[in-house]
Image 1: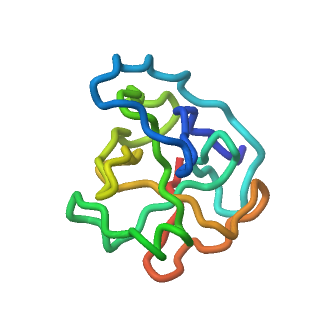
Image 2 (image 1 turned 135 degrees about the horizontal axis):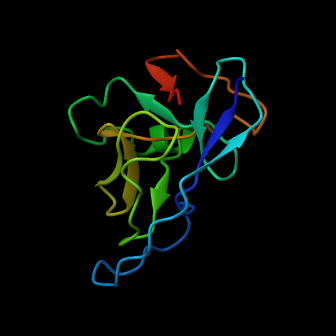
Length: 138
């Protein structure tokens, strides 16, 4: 059975101001929910049902997609202090966060920063395999 997996960490919009780094940590969020299938099989997605992507140019543990890149590929971010579940039942890999150059915290999968694609919808995945961008398989 194919399914669209929802990564249920709190995803803050880029326009949302980040809370103070000194704020108390937020509790980790529920693990995962299964959603409708995709042509690519099981993939990790945001609570808005957008596929999560990694970029193969970011294999050095650093964020390189900033500026106009981040406009096309919005980073999946969380409020400062949010505890991301490291291991989500039913999903391979380890989740965490990395600090972006602008100071926001971005969700990672196996150390790779996670993004969405601005042209995707809850029902479409447009850029898997394009210019080094790949959806995260569940």
